[in-house]
Length: 100
Length: 111
View 1 (tube, each protein chain N blue to C red):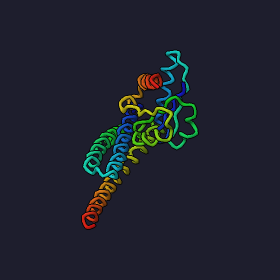
View 2: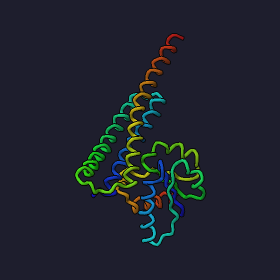
View 3: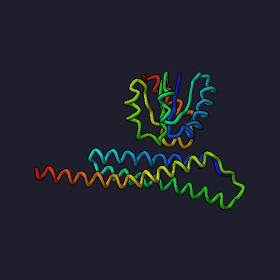
């Protein structure tokens, strides 16, 4: 499964990626998780099962949805993001992908 | 010691403030001035929390000169500056849209 995270610059989401990878590997799940800035999304998004947006770019959810109508777009919850809760964010992404 | 979570609080609240401010502009553009103003107030509330967190961190620096500054903290400050600019401009945009609306209504009334 491929998960792409995007925020303004890709830095804070980059930290969350580390936490999500840790959780995925602890569960023995193979996942390709990466982070980028919104401006690079176009080059990175190919093959993604889901796009996760940092809450700070939540206002662009509609635009991203329009741009990639075939990929589910989810805004990460503020609290999960603030606490860098990789496990919870990963599980939510899994749920959305499973429901696709 | 400044923790990653402390710094993250700035990013989260400043980020939320910016998101709310940008949404408020969208609402004003769509004609809903009342909810735009409400959104802006909410945005300012979030910014205030980010600011408080930032002040707390600065005070830690003041009391401990050996406190290491990280790139991540600089990044968080960048988020906060972006949010401050966004909320400032949002107020102006809402005012503009409100005035535009009044003008439109006047023109319609005269037509």
